[in-house]
Image 1 (cartoon, one colour):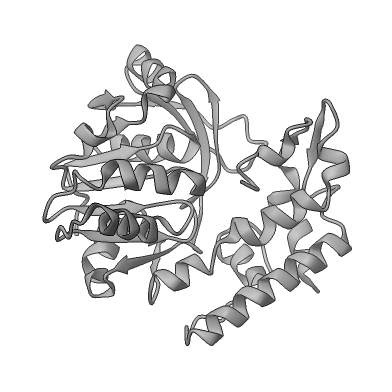
Image 2 (cartoon, one colour):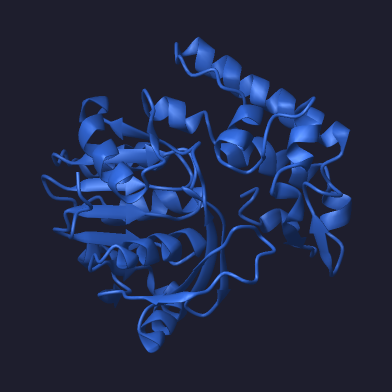
Length: 311
C-alpha cells in the first residue's frame, strides 16, 4: 500500500510535528491542525513555510542536517480539518485523548481511518465519545503502543528533531477486523511498525507507563529542585529504580497473559528491538544503562509532577 494522499495530523508536539514532516518528505500534502491554544506552533510553521526537521542518530547528535519539509495547510479548527479527510492521525498526550475524542465525535464520516499514534488508548476514548454522542459512523480506528520515533523534541518554533526507531511500535485496529487496512496505512508511513492482536495489546505495551512513571516518582527529590536538569535513567536509573521498572513490566505481562494475548515479550527486549539499546545485558539495569535513555536530560522544577511523563 502506498501512503494515502489525504492526511490530516492533529497535534503540534514533537510527535505530531515529526509525523507531519515525515509525510511532507514523502511528498504528501499534509494538513497540520491543533486547538486554538496551540496556535503559536501553527503560526511558526506557516511563517517558516514548513517544518524544520532533523532526523538524528542520537540525542547528542549535532551533526545531522536539518531540512525544511512542506506542509500544505494548517488549521486551528481540528473538527473542520478532520471532517471528510481519508486519514486522520492524532498525536497528543494521553490526557488529551478524551477531550479530542469528544470534540471530534460529531464529525466523523463513514469510510474514514483514524490513527491514534503515540500514547495508546485513543481508540477507547473515541468509542466512548461516539457512544455518548449516539453515533455509529463506519470508521476504522487504530492505536499504537508508542511513537514510531524516540526523542521527538521541539527545539524551537516550527523545529523538531527525532530518531526513527527500528521496531517496537505496534499497531492495532478497532474493530480488529480492520487490521489489514489500519496496519497497511501505518506501515506505508513507518515500515518498522508491526501488527498487534488487539487494542488491549497496545494498551498493555505502553513503554512510557513502564519506564517513565517509576523513574519520575522515585526521583522526586532530585527533579523537584528549583532549577537544573537531571538524567532520569542515568543518575536516576539506579538498580533499585530499575527493579521497580522490571516489577511493573511483570504486572503488564501478567495482565496480557490473563487476557490471552500471545505477546509475552518483556520490556528489556523491546529496548533492543526499538534500536535504543545495542543488545541485552546481564540484567535490565545493564541493558538500560547501555541504551539511549540515560542521555535524556529532564528539566527540574517544583511542578515536575505535572509533566506529561506522569500526567
